[in-house]
Length: 325
Image: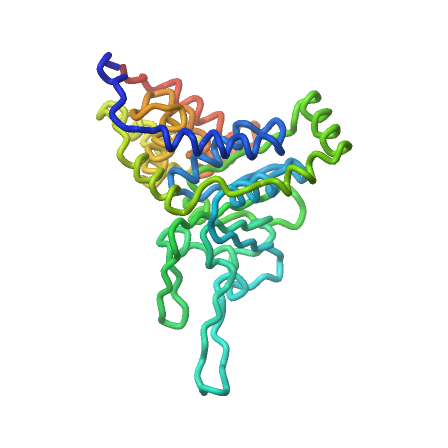
């Protein structure tokens, strides 16, 4: 990058203060999930939906709830189950005998931050109820369109696919998530700290003290700042090349769509802003590449049998493409 690129053109002080406040709020309760917390914040700032995947008990739901509680907005939670119907999520029309007409009663999807817990516990029919609202921020019921209030963000959690009693998410739905975050186990030291916090009742007191640190207006202002961040033409081409390579890679059965390129540039902008920069670097793109692409691509059957993962393939693609200077 040229030297003049390091001259700050955008005032990021308000955004950085907000990020540090959210980090501090979540970090005081959740131990050892710094990367998860950062991607949750980046998703919020980039106006994208997030899928959290991990085994039970690694604080997926807690992380999502704390992000929601750090924003002074309408929070709604839906627990997905095998018998959940689309109307249980979107709402339904109920006949009112007094007016002799049908009245639409809104479902839990109406809110600013929606936690969809165990999203892969529900069958495809219910999961598909989220298609329209996640992409177009609106739902259509009985011929009427209802537009969601901004900001609108879906935070979904799921257990790994091989867990019993789950359904694979449709590819069209996976493509609507900005990031898929893999939440792993804590280290030994982190687990000891978790046990000490629980033993000393620090977790309960910490949860009670969580306060909203951002208003809806501040979230919208931060998002507007991020949209204005500078991205050099070389980096735009770099992002396009990475996505294009997924469509020609010998290990992949399904490549990423242009929506993935848009997600990568928006995610990279958010990551750059969180680090106090008003321009995107190749490192920002590399950082978001796997969370953006891994859930959008499909391995061929033989590569899957060999134990290769989608994140491995994204890493191979990153290594193959020349980094812009």
